[in-house]
Image (cartoon, rainbow, N blue to C red):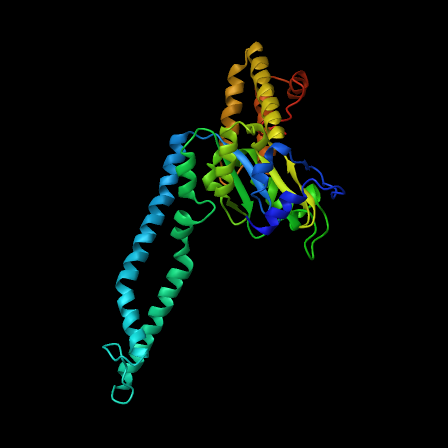
Length: 351
């Protein structure tokens, strides 16, 4: 555990703690075993992946195969290149062999050709082992957690906890404390709007398995995922505490506390309200003998939302206008119908 993690653990309960910006609040004490593994400079996001275990298994086998293939290529390259590099080293140490260049007796063409060839070989091997070599090493051996160790300990489950950590930015950026930042913290921070909100989008989390959420802004913390799963198995924490939550350390190395924004509760509530509104929408049309209009609306939303570029604000406005036209074609007053079900707020394409 790093010194920053140790200090975070020891200082969490000290008085005179810095103010926590909206929409964050103090993290529950039950999460302390997990939070103690976090780095105070990093922002973390946890969520529960509810995709079927079979789907996650098929997704995971792809990087396993890729990394095994890369490891095999690296080992093969090492097998063939190591004897050559040994001979070159021996030649430098004045133990002549077939790689030795005799400057006085060898033709200039031969010497230049050998130098250029070796230069490209050195560059190729450097790039190969410097930038590609770490992939299988981190995949199989990185500690305190790696994808293989995580799957070995956790297996494949229908409900899995994933923990993402910020990449290339961190707590100072989110809290407005970074040098050159605007000073805006929490929901007012540009990083909240450009990093956090897209990462916790409910539709994105449903569309992708947790393993596929790694990108330029977030990586997966496999060690934390192992710890979180262990805590869940022991029932020391609940799924609700880890369901789409954002964690950030408010303070510094000398003192502070972990803060959390449990945005999963908002998504669950919004999902429930939207489902109730859709059911009411369908039931009211059925009572009017216009149930077919409901299915036309479903087809319209599916068509517009699956179009290239995503379900943008412009496309949603177009969907609402087309829905109005569908109602008018059926002789239904759109405004009166909207008022009868309490408005269309929360329904897809009807904001």
